[in-house]
Amino acid sequence: NQPNVDEKRTVVKSNYLPIREHIRTIIEEKKSNLCLSADLTNLDEIIELSKQVGDYICLLKIHCDILNDFTMEKIRQLKTISKEKNFLLFEDRKFADIGNTVSLQYTKGLSQICEWADLVTVHALPGDGILKALEESSKEVGEPRGCFLLAQMSSKGALTDEKYVKATVQYAEKYQNFVIGFIAQSRLSTSSNIDYIHCTPGVHINSSEDKFGQQYISPAEAVLQRGADVIICGRAILESNDRVQTAKLYQTEGYKAYQQKRQ
Ligand code: 5FU
Image (tube, rainbow, N blue to C red; front, side, top):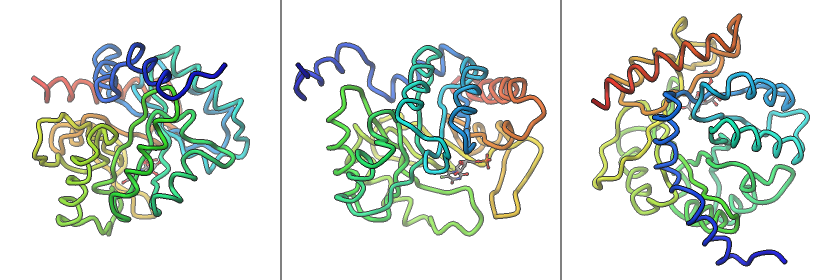
């Protein structure tokens, strides 16, 4: 007998913290505000990597549409590791279509993202129907789900100007239970007291850009000058000689700045 939706919601209430609070707790408990962006094309490799670096991260971000070997069985293995190691799974899907379509993209197809991704990214561009659709779909699973709204991108020439950011923040306020924070390059001013989680990608200690317009700043700059709570690091770790040691370095640098900022 499957529990009905209302029974599932009761389970959520008793077993889980709201997701925004959950992330803050993980950050404090693990002393890590590092999100590893595991932009690899092999899920087996991500699973192995997550075992090695899982203790040093608060979030693991993937792009499931670049995986050559995606199966639901493997993604459930990754989910089990995320629970054992206490980090959240984050699919950087960047939803950007009408509500009806994103709801199908979120719940159906080969990857059934909603089943396993604690967090996803969403563009505000199509209007707030996108949030209504995703939030409604998310209630069908028996675990809390949330999203980050893309407010500002790290890439050169991004069209996310001030007016766009302002409108994005207004959508976040309207869907404040589902929108737990932003992907941003600065601290955004909001009209509520909600402690939105700000995640900043484009973080690298040894590089300032890539050849396709990605722009990098250091962990300290991301947190202390731009106001990030979570730093998102991909190639800085993936392309290093020692991924585990480099993850530890970004964990230390990121959390040192996080503590300084929260004092
Ligand atoms: F929303 C964004 C953004 O503005 N910049 C990004 O770089 C997302 N990203 C993602 O963060 C991007 O899709 C990669 O997955 C990751 C950054 O990877 P890097 O290797 O650290 O440059």
